[in-house]
Length: 142
Ligand SMILES: [Zn+2]
Ligand SMILES: [Zn+2]
Image 1 (cartoon, rainbow, N blue to C red):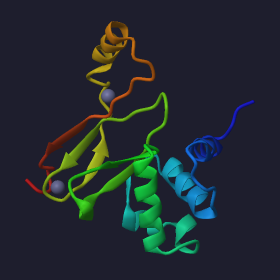
Image 2: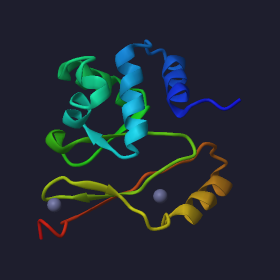
Image 3: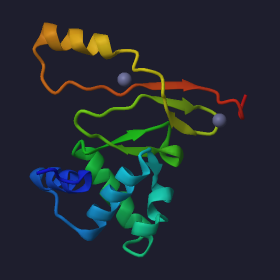
């Protein structure tokens, strides 16, 4: 039996004691479908959420989910904060422009995969993960 990633994410939230709401489901579905980090404004104006709830509700939901470790906040500051879903077994490393706040996933093979394996073996930690953020100036801002 294979569950959809959205269902899995909703179940994880319920396991953490979060209330299952339409807004929660739509927000998780939007992030999963987008396959990239999104800002508060992008989420609030997205097709699934725009009719569902206002920006303040999306904001509170993002804060709560970040606090529970379901989402991770990326980026530089409040204005250019991006939110990404932490999914077990999946990860991205990111490139962030310090000029415009633009963020993108790095497509090159993960640079610290071997290191992660080594840490796992030497420390006995389970469920180890990482997400790297590289900062710099993008070609447009340079
Ligand atoms: Zn830039
Ligand atoms: Zn990585």
